[in-house]
Amino acid sequence: MTMDASTPATAEAEAAPRALHFGLAVLALAMGGFAIGTTEFVTMGLLPQIADGVSVSIPVSGHVISAYAVGVVVGAPVLAFLGARLPRRALLLWLMAAFAIGNSLSAMAGSYGLLMLARFVAGLPHGAYFGVASLVAASLAPAGRKGRAVALVMLGLSVANVIGVPAATWLGQHLGWRSAYWAVAVLGVITVLMISAYVPRLAADPHASGRRELAAFSRVQVWLTLLAGAVGFGGMFAVYSYIAPTITDVGMLSESAVPVFLLVFGLGMTFGTWAAGELADRSVFGSLLGSSLGMAIVLLGFAAVTPYGWWALPVAFLISAISSVLVVTLQLRLMGVAGDAQTLGAAMNHASLNVANALGAWLGGLVIAAGWGYRSPALVGVALSLSGFIVLVFAFFLARNQSRAQVRVEPDTHGG
Figure 1 (cartoon, rainbow, N blue to C red):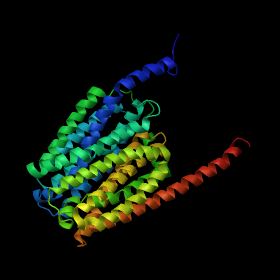
Figure 2: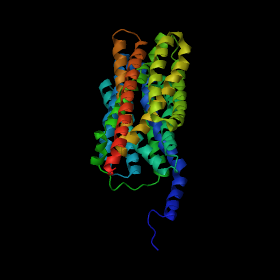
Figure 3: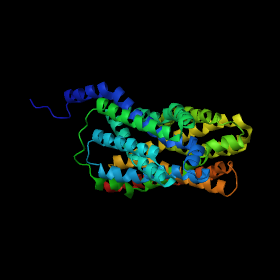
Figure 4: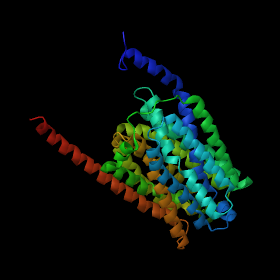
């Protein structure tokens, strides 16, 4: 008797290796998120040291953050397109190998120009990695736990801000900023080894193609979700990009307070990532709208309390927690509206978030350079968060109207 792929016995056979590999596989995928989160955010905590090291001002050194973000934006669609037909495990290995090389080049950069180029290269695999890792985790997860699996991968990014970023910041302050990038390169190599050992081989989708992935760009809701992330999430980066000089120059705290604030940011991200899963199960759109509006409120509060030193610490926690809710729910929304273009849809979330990274860091640097002080980026962040909120409100009403129109048309299409 021949047994087809839909029989219960085959389903059980497929579930067994999935259950066997799931925990270690997700740990390996989350390690990649940990490495990426460390390199993305450690630059912000070491801006004064980097500025001194390559002989530029702090606002100019903030463009290094933007260079990484631009790399993510460019790399996400390009690598998702080129890697659409590759087995996802192999694609993950190539992406993390490139990530390790990019961070090694960052550590070796001898000038501002070379550092900008190296950070661009290091950012190229970022979005594609998170997109593919999320899809792999979802494919390995038991039924009904796919959302939690994606959140676990994203949790690596959050934990990076609890452990990786403060540790790498401390390392960079005491052994030189280059040591932080060397440490991240080592994390990239460890991730390659863990993925090789624990992530099972998954056959490539025979129907996948770059052309099918590009179909995501024909969907209005995809564009609106990307726009909401690119603008609204910029509010967080406008503040976080200049957190070190804000704490020391406005809050009048010592340099040793910077890792503490980064640790609190990481704790907030970890809490927010966990909370996002609970909130999204109730309403993805409600969570998106609430986190966007909440971000504007807490950023305004940050601008108000920064001169009071340690009183800004709980507000920093809220900023990171709310921003993490926004990240996860944007990811879920994109995976829902991308249709068959799953790889590109999942990857583009991090592309849009790094447009926000570049936009927030750039606008924050502009207002600082204009002489408005280190509190001004928070006010820029308020404007960006409210702009993202407006985009989401528009997307919500557009989707609702389209659903109503579809319901009205359906009876006619069946001759009713």
